[in-house]
Amino acid sequence: MNLPILEDVEYRPAASRPGTAAGSRSVYIETYGCQMNVADSELVASILNESGYQITTAAEEADIILLNTCAVREHAEERVIGRISQLNGLRAHRPNLTLGVLGCMAQHLSKSLPVRAPFVDLVMGPDAYRRLPEILAQSSDDALFDVRLDRAENYIGVDPVRRTGTNAWVTIIRGCDKFCTFCIVPYVRGRERSVSPGQIVDQVKRIAQEGFKEVTLLGQTVNSYREGDTDFADLLREVSAIDGIERVRFTSPYPVDFTDRVIAAMAEVNEVCPSLHLPVQSGSNKQLDTMQRGYTIEEYRELIRKLRIAIPDIALTTDIITGFCGESDEDFRLTYELMEEIRYDSAFMFKYSAREGTYAHKKMNDNIPEEIKGQRLQQVIKLQESISREVNQQYIGQTVEVLVEGPSKRPAKDGQPRFYGRTRQGKTAILTQEIQANEIVNIRVTDTTSHTLLGEIAE
Ligand code: SF4
Image (tube, rainbow, N blue to C red; front, side, top):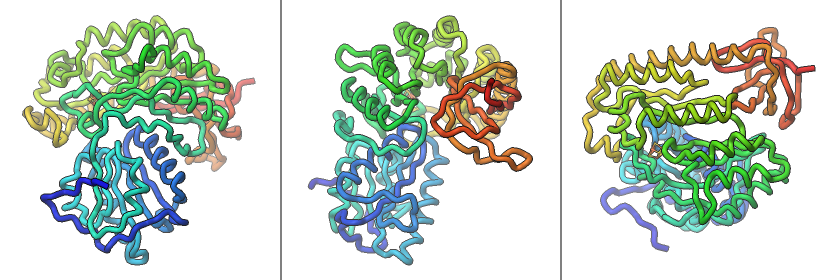
């Protein structure tokens, strides 16, 4: 086996790691970051299961602990480093414990991780998971690396081990070709490649047989999907036609690749939910150009206009970055005004932090003071909170369809249990009546907050 071992950094785990031939060895997987990582952890579980490893939900009992990590935000990396150090403490009682880091951060920090966490045994990027059983079976004093990107790896033939629940994630396209200047994803996940439609349809049929009613199609640029003659619009229609699938969602689409055919599929196919996360990042053309997003704000507005005409009840969410390189007061004002104009249902909002390895980190001046970035972030958060509250209030008195997910973590004020689910628009709905998970019910909305709808079963 030809594993790339770092040449310039010594990397020795705390104890000599024995080979872990499957036998009855157990594996605990902890996942950070986006839904793609959740789906990847399900792939990893499947690959290890097939090789005889048992998946456990208790880190303290596991022979092997794998952290599937995210590199998109620095904060997530710091959390993972802290968590690995904490888990390393388990070695006091389990000296043969194997500790591995998988995913985007493993890919991104393959050189510095050995210095920051020298007790890690295994570092593996997102295209190398098929080799996990082979690598775990090796006995070695040195940490083992496989962070090669593979243009062809789509994990064809691996059927993910899904957690029970109401929604199944299905990765339909891996990687990204867009190279937005702030983003690390193309460097850690490689080039775009689509999974064949036949493979996706077979997977969704199995999902439906397992009892899932909702499926979410995943990709960094999910609507860039194309395989042979099948584009994303065709795929949406094919997946929606599968018996037992009642809701189809997808995330995240890229505005430039959003075609009229996809809008038509969303409008015409009842199973495709009227909810869309459409990242805009900035309301300023100058900033969009600096970010190399590939669209103007006029083009983005036109897309929203078409979507709202075709799907009047659509819920829209977005991503906003404040304080990206060169963002002037005027650029920020344009973002703020765009949010006032579009009135998103909700938004993920972040202040810019440079990620090592990106174009922006290498070539651009991160010249907006932290204080200004933070102030702008607080302004958009405050704005979005009030818009979300107002948008949700419009649902009061309406009847909405909810797919129940289970008991809510927070009981009612009087201590009574509550249950939660999601509307077709993707909003969290809370109800006091007990309804079995995976049931679809109609509820009448009685109250709202900026994040939830509260309701009771409609007569
Ligand atoms: S489209 Fe841009 S932001 Fe999204 S994953 Fe690709 S490079 Fe990153």
